[in-house]
Amino acid sequence: MVVMVFPVKLFRSALVTAILFAPLGFAQSSFGVRILLGAGDQQNTRWDGSISSSDATVARLEPWRFEAADSISGSTWKMSTHPIKLFLGGIFLANASKAKSLVIANGVIVQLSDVREGAQVSITTAEGNFSFRPSDIVYGSAKSFLNGRAQVERVPPATQITKSPDEQDYPASAVDHDGAVWVAYVEFRHSQDHDRLRANMTAPPNNFEQYRTRTGGDQILVRRFAGGVWSEPIEITPAGLDLYRPSIAIDGKNRLWVFWSQNEKSNFDVHARVIEGRRDLCLTSKRQFVQRSGEDFNFQRE
Image 1 (cartoon, rainbow, N blue to C red):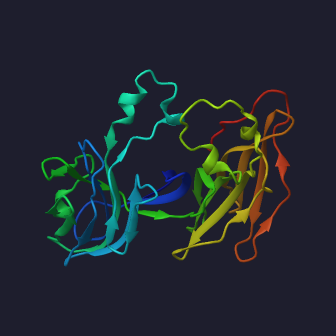
Image 2 (image 1 turned 90 degrees about the vertical axis):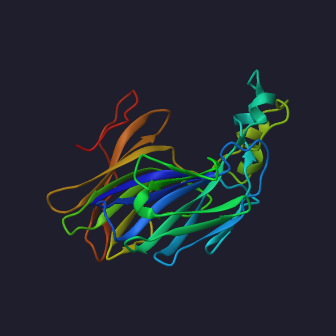
């Protein structure tokens, strides 16, 4: 099996998610699919629906391109297709009015568990119903239904690690000698006016002073996965800094090293901190590995 950790853009936040690539075959303990609804719609269309199966358990539903009025409850959802969202409302596009008329598909990510041989999954929607067998959904090849307006494609089963209005990004992972998975990431905290300031514009702003609102800055956090449980975040740095892209490694003494680039006085330098111990975690003092003029970042663990 292969574990991958990556950031996912969801609504207006980036979240850290872990996925598990398991060997192909059935039956399977977990199985993921993305169900895309409303492909080719020319206007907002309701796609409220549900998912069910007598041969598999619907473990979790997650939104894909949801907006504020869309929602999930158990194994049902309420959603519509929506006009495309353009950066800054498309004010810099010559054909913005045409682009704004485009309607994009909406959908859900489905995590199935206890998928038995020959299992069949049924989907009901306001625009029609269809069903599929998970064994027919393979990586890299989507299946179409409802004359192409609905599509189902396989995705790796995923676990969402973080869940907050803040941005979690640039995850890096390592496995220690005991088999525990460690994940380091940057958390960025928005200003209180973040949503209002980034809302689509109807006209160019006359005053840019409001965009000088200070943010909460960056912070490096680490979490540990062992015994099927993710730990609470461990603070590697204080909040409110200007940080970039952590890296993580385990040394021969089974100590966890976390590296990152930190901006101080308009210069990025490389810093590191070590986590020792397992039951009582001990954080060593921060070490500055590189201190020189010029930007030091984009380093990688070999």
